[in-house]
Structures are given as C-alpha cells and as structure tokens.
Image (cartoon, rainbow, N blue to C red; front, top):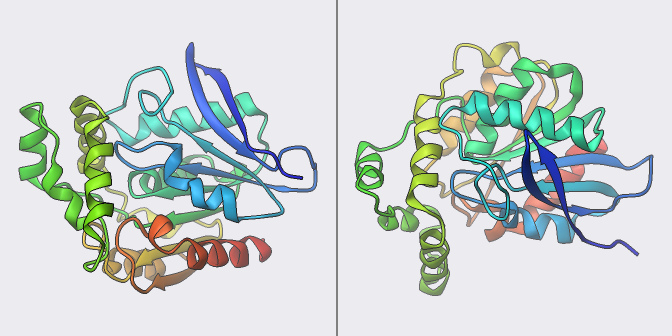
Length: 257
C-alpha cells in the first residue's frame, strides 16, 4: 500500500516542505514536481494521488506553502534550489516536472544539469514567460492580481472554482507573487532550448490564455526529443482541470524512458 508522507528537509539552512508518494522501491522512477508562481505542492495533488508505480515528490519552493526561506526573483535562484534539494534527498537521476514558472525552472535546469535528468515534463509553460505590466503594477502596490484568476482556467470554468482560486491567492503574500512574476518576466531561453537533449513531454490546455499553445509548439519545434499533448477543455491549470488526461500522458511518457 502506498502511503503519502509529509516531510521536511534542510536546504540552505531553511526548512523545506515536500510531499512524497511511493518511496521505498529502488526500481521505481523518481519524479520531482515543481509548482508555478505563488503556488505550492498542492498544485500536483491529483498527480500524486493518481500516478502509480513511481516515486513522486512535490516540493514547496522557498517562501511558498509550508517552506521557509525567501521567494526568488530569478529563475536561476530556483534552479539552484532544486539542484540542492535533489542532492539533499539523494536523487541521482530523476524526471523533473514543472508548471508555468516551474516549467521555466525545469528548462533552465535541463540546460545546466542535464546529466541528472532522465527527462523533463513542461506543463503550461514556455521558453519565455513575460508578465503583463498591469499585473506587475498591481503587485508593486502590494495588492493581489485577482483579475488574473479568470485567465487561469478554461473559459467555461464554474464560478465556484474561480472563487476558490481567488481565496487561495489571497492567502499568499503579494510579495511572493511579485518576486515570482519578476523571475518569470526576466526569463528567456528561446535561443537556447534547441540545445536541450533530454527527452521532454510538453502538456498544455487548449484554452490556456496565460501560456498559449503557441508557446508549447515553439518548444516542440526547437527541442529535438520532444512530444506535445494538447488537452481539451482545460486552461492554464490543466493538471487540476483534466487530471486523468494529464496523468495518462505523464505515465505514457515515463514508460518510454
């Protein structure tokens, strides 16, 4: 029987929270999940609950969720955190999954530490992650960009889902979002992704307005070992909107490695 465990690790002197599923079998493939801007491990709750036969780890980045430390304003800072976190957990070779900003972290990681990766999975992400000046302006005033929530889900998303997302956003300090979105806005590896040689799966909701499908198609065109899955009836939060389709695509990809 697989048991979910809530764990903490010390990284750079900070107490880092992560959730773990399926630990204990040496032959199981390790998959490390990294959330997006202002998020937490909970982004991946339906993946940890639905994917079987793997060692799954979902981490709260510094300053997020139940982790200590401070949010970073450069993707490179998060990249180095993930590298150190993997070392602390003793992960030798693993699959790195990232959503949105987490996908940017995964791309930068693949460019810097390819030898540690069996593959990467990019969910609702891109090689460049520019942020609307209006959103950055709202954050600079110390307010939450609540108006952006409606762009995070498929166009026919129920209002109760949007209300819950707004409530969750309000639980995160605006300064965390500001750091994360600054990191996204500065991120640009469009001229470098062609050199990424690790196998990659790209997942994107067909209704994603924040990182449109053209971002994913660009990655597919430029990266040599890439497959693309567009998920119907899903927006930017595709992993929670259509978890069965996402989990199936992830499992199929993992089986090829």
